[in-house]
Amino acid sequence: MSRSTTAGRIAMPDLVASDYTFARLVIERGLALIYLIGFVVAVRQFPALCGERGLEPAPRFLARVRFLDAPSLFHWGYSDRRLRIVSWSGVALSAGLALGLAQQAPLPVTMLTWFILWVLYQSISNIGGTFYSFGWESLLLEAGFLAIFLGNDAIAPPWLVLLAFRWLAFRVELGAGLIKLRGDRCWRDLTCMDYHHETQPMPNPLSWFFHRLPRPLHRLELVGNFVAQLVLPFGLFLPQPFASLAALLMIATQLYLVVSGNYAWLNWVTILAIVAAVADPIRTTATFEPTPAWFTLAVLALTVLVAILSWWPVRNMASPGQAMNASFNPFRLVNTYGAFGSVGRERIELVIEGTDADEPRPDAAWREYGFKGKPDDPKRLPPQVAPYHLRLDWLLWFIPLSPRYGGDWFVRFIARLLEGDRQILGLLRRNPFPDAPPRFVRARFFRYRFTTWRERRESGAWWVRRFEADYLPPVRLDDLRRTGV
Image (tube, rainbow, N blue to C red; front, side):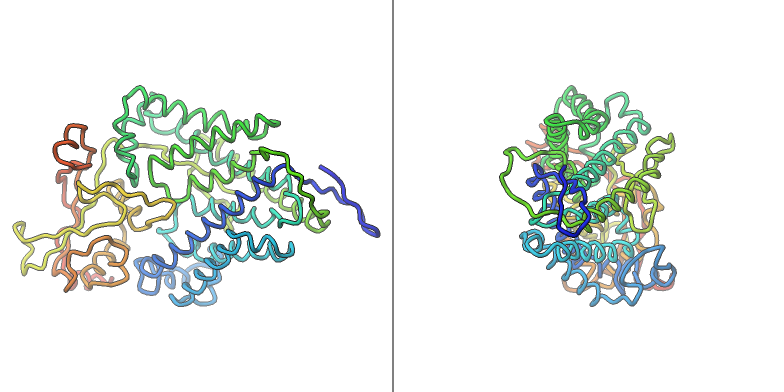
């Protein structure tokens, strides 16, 4: 920490961390790339899911909420064309930051670039309804807001902003650990990992192998998880080199999650926040310009704001009724986090089929729709998707857990399949009716489990599945139109 003086001006504390230049570079480049992915997801998925003819149309949502209920530029008018303009603008600005171009600009320009990104993504996320209800949306927005105050390449990294990133990582990890301790009994008896790799929302190519690890290693996984989430976060605030050591161990556990499942950009933004505790491995000889007094005041104001807003997430984490992934202000500035307070013991998947038969008899030729991420064909290797986010696939995973997740949007989804809607079909991996839409569509529950080593060798399949129950009986488009979808 040092002081800068300029003739004719009052001296202000710099509050700089000159030995964290690598940490700032990684945080800035990484967040810019995550923003870029988020905007690409919006371009490719938002119109079908939440657009003018979406499953949860944003115009209907905007008509019933105030600006302060859901801050968004689209309160001044929504159209799919405007959504694409906003999203492509976000892609361009994100790319500029990822390449380090904006960081070469004057400090106000760099800050303005980060601010515009935050406003643009906030504008999209806040009107996305159910499809944007995931905790990593708030995580990206909170981290993106802090990035506004990281400065440009001309000045040293501000120490208090790096501390705010550590505080963010602390809340993400500790919140996740506490929700597990208070949640499912299997976390406390060390058996949750016997099921989790198989029943997680979207397994990846290695999930089968992680599930088939010996049970003692599953116990070790869980103990390591508790150490990473309940002990190591406190190390982020220790002097060096202990803070760096704690951070590197936490990053290793996050990378373990990256290679064992698909969690969109949750793990990657968490890693970037943790990096704020990693000091430069080699002390830099770079020289920086004096930090402007106005920027120091802005960083101090941010620190006060974060401290005040932290009251609500701290109270939440201390509460026996701890909530997961909650925001306490409309701009999602300081939030509470947590994941997997409960773990499923079995995997139930929604399988959607259509037929072009005149009558939907059981012996009709039913053909199955294929999805990009969620399990369907038992012989298909679960794909690697993250940090990209398949919003429809994730929402379909929730329906077997509780019928309330499959509301009006799911009925509209079925109607769009019966219409042969190109936007919706573009979200799928396989359309079994390429020439004309089916006459009937149905949805059924199947129980999935990973194959054993022997079953895998003999059949080449990754999953074994069996029919459980009907969810939606065969319906025609006329039937749904009478419901007003």
